[in-house]
Image 1 (spheres, rainbow, N blue to C red):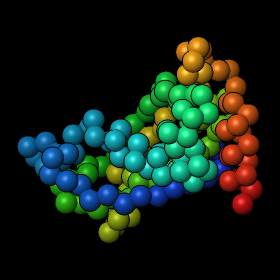
Image 2: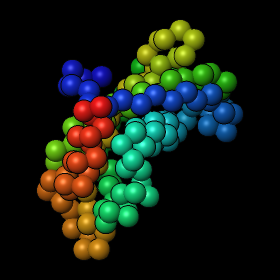
Image 3: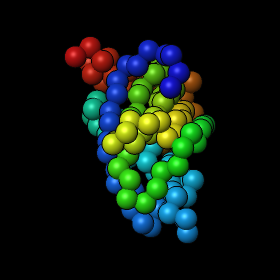
Length: 143
């Protein structure tokens, strides 16, 4: 992960199911986005801003950029740890991810996502993070 200051962090453990794998029992690359999503949802819940609450406040947060670097392979039955780290929120939500093997601690995958606020009613992208989210984040970061 990059050397930016981590503002909030969440961790989840996942046991790789058979249906996520290709014929060689290696996780199909598209499933890593889902693993990031599971950890991201846990991170958003830490400051009570899951997707339902985002919409209630009038915003949706589409992902506008996603980066993934595959260091090692995740395989069927393996237990992985997925860490999501919030590193930016002033104008966008920037979250870094790290997937490691639970048993060995070896690094398997790293990545990042960038999300921006879009007004649900007008469909206009916001050029700053809405104050309602800033307030929630500052309260969570300060505790």
